[in-house]
Picture 1 (cartoon, rainbow, N blue to C red):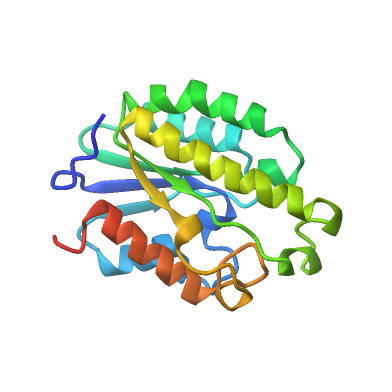
Picture 2 (cartoon, rainbow, N blue to C red; picture 1 turned 90 degrees about the vertical axis):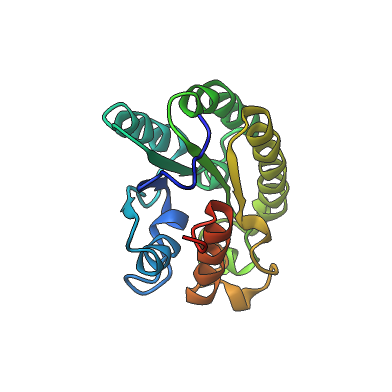
Length: 197
């Protein structure tokens, strides 16, 4: 289902800590920043810290089954799956099976999560032994999501290109700081063309 920028009055955001705004002070995550800029839209952030992709999709599908009218949905997940050591092929298989079905029922936007810096090792999110492999998997996952979004004809927000891969943009090497989340908010505004409303 196409994302009709002019008629969507509610946006539901589903994801993990990157969508929840972890690493920023309360109210400074990217969803909250966009919501403050655009009170004419109803925003609900359903993100859950530590959520895996299957859990995010289950929650999204459950909410999508209850909506009526023009309500948009945002999905971003996969980082926790990769950091937990799940096979990339398994993650891709799950999304290939489920996202096209969801996008056929509701207007959907897919988010590509950012890569991590080495600070994520020192802050305890991953070990040094798997850092390079995880970076390769996160990059390949982003490529996969780009292709999936194109094939499914859904809106895409590529947060992996929001800012340079430098610690100055991160809270802990994995989650953006307030400045990084502001950049996410700018990208969401541009993708959804809500600046023009």
